[in-house]
Length: 442
Image (cartoon, rainbow, N blue to C red; front, side, top):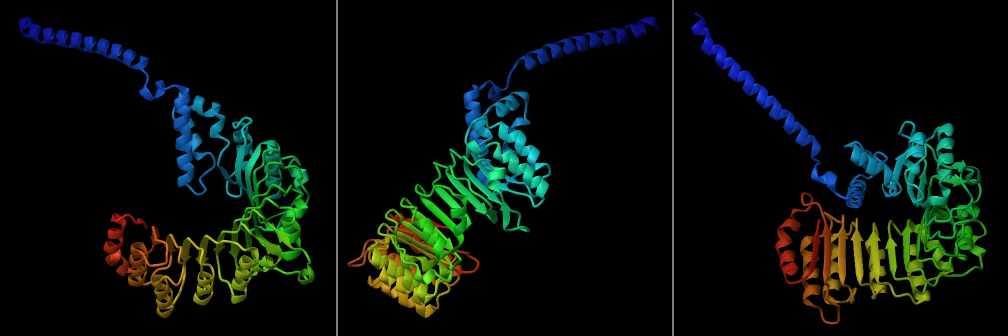
């Protein structure tokens, strides 16, 4: 019996010795593995920071309004090494900060903690303030602590609240030394800021606010007003000799507007963006010799078109770029025939009849319209625009029409389901692309 059990016992001893050896080997391997670092963790901090900055930039571009600091916090949660790098890199916390304080709990505390991480770097902020007065005051006070670092700042109200009166002298410092662009959306100001020597771009709801704010206007290059009346606007424009871009919408006239004697010369203004017909009223008071780009964003009347053409003629402007959106055929055609210097044309959301399209395209093919056109863009014009007519124009102007400049760039944006004939006509366009025409189709 004893001899029969000896063999199994010997086998068990051998197995236990093998297990002990494997356990010892496992321990050594775990020690070796623990001493190793993943290759990504061996990178110099400078390279890691550059990778992080690129990652955060991409995340911000892909998300219209992401949770605040979402990308940065994800990096900080991976491991201790990345957390240390993230928390110590100021450049990850100062740029593209979008915070919807109306929908985020304890947004004031979040801003207080995160803005401090930016160190002394300039701040780019897009802040949607809450409707709760106490929370709003807390957030405004927090933002005010960093007024000396504001660079590009957009402050807006929640959709359910508008026309707030904020005493900016109370909430924010009067000195904004590095502020370059400032936007107030649906927020009315109650007092002035005055000192902002670097301010170049200003976007406000009302032209009178530009005066109330007391901001320096002489270095402004871009002014965007959602609502305006003529008299205050002219008073503002009189102090903007360096203005390059003016965007207006929803203008109206005060009782004394018609007797305003002021005429304003803006020698550097090259872009005029007109939203809604009343925006053209100010043009009768302006001289714009450098104007070369006009964007007609919404419906205009005959009077609005005449105001634009009159200003161009009076200013001896040379219009190179014209964007037309939601414009009736007759008004659009008047612009196109009256501005023969147009090189770049963008047509968007037009509802022209077949006969009207025939007239326009025939004039293009013959060279009687837009003789120096170099690039053509059509956006959201489908299914109204006829594929065969458009392609015939592109082909003719690409191959060359006597007395006209050769068309060298075409960009089309359309819904294939709503206009299948375009898909069938693509072979012709792609052939022109192979010949050298710059072609972009979305």
